[in-house]
Amino acid sequence: MAEVNIPKRKSDEVLVRMVYSGKLAAMDTLIDRYYSLCFGICMAVLKDYDDASDACQNCFVNVFKNIGKFRGDGNFRSWVLTIARNESFSVLRQSKNRRENVYEKMEPALRSREDVPREVFLRIESSQVREVVETLPDKQRLAIKLRIDEGLSFKEIGQIIGSSEGASRVNYHHGIGKLKELLGA
Amino acid sequence: MIIWECIEAKGYLSAGVRGELSEPIKAELDRHVLDCSDCRGELELIEKLFVLRPATPLQLPLEIKKAVRLEFFEAETSYWRKLLPAAAVTTLLVSASLLDKVLFLPDISLLEQDFFVNVWPSEDYDLAGSLVLDDFSEESLNLLFEEIK
Image: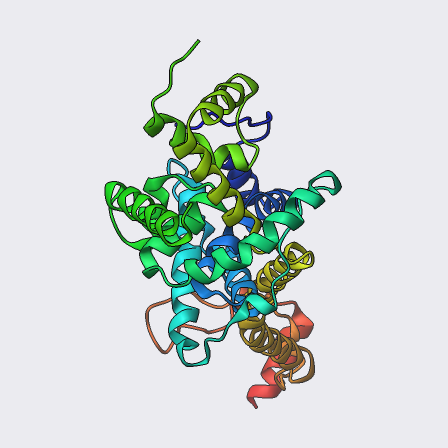
């Protein structure tokens, strides 16, 4: 299990209680905390910038519209993941016929200025990887993207791709194995 | 010093690429990767995959907040909007009843203009509702007799 540095901050449960009592600032904090993760999931499923943005927006509208149904003892992150998954698959069903290669629209993220030379170098090599990733079965591709891009646990990945924790772990390792084989890594 | 198996080291690779590992774990992972070509190859692959991740649109959080607020505001407004017709009907009825009381007072004789006039409490229909003559002044009695005539 990866050890993660988490700065001290208000827990999700505390923020949810604050939202219950009408504090909009708490709602903003929860959005700031999870929009990136939510967008990452939507993007992994939909592979379209605009669709993913819409799905992400709808996800949060639904999260707060139904905040009364969220039980305080549950896991808010897991709840957001489930709603993001459902929104993404709902949009995917609607736009199945207009799927296109959206990677042209995408700007790969750079973490900081110091990373640029290394990132540029990796980006050139990554263009080849991108094509190969697209040849993977959906579950393996999703498992890899959600694990590497978003840092989700295998349990959370299973929740999104609709399989068990063990199966999502297998999907990830098979996918990585296949990529290594195809890329000669 | 921890001696890591590859399977354990591989579990930390993606978190390492995202910069989420604590210093001691990261140092240990780096040491393992340096000595293990298989894990090094996997780390390089994960780095390439990580570079491919899409950047989150800068405006997205603002758009989400706007959409959520709009939804909340609409929900609140529509709640009051639902109550508006009922409130309007109630106001109309109250106003109408007040107007009725003020403008359409019953046409009564001088004697009956006293709202607190006493009537005879009786279960006999002929007597019930009769004025109590004992409390009347002489002048009122004369007026009453005039009306009866």
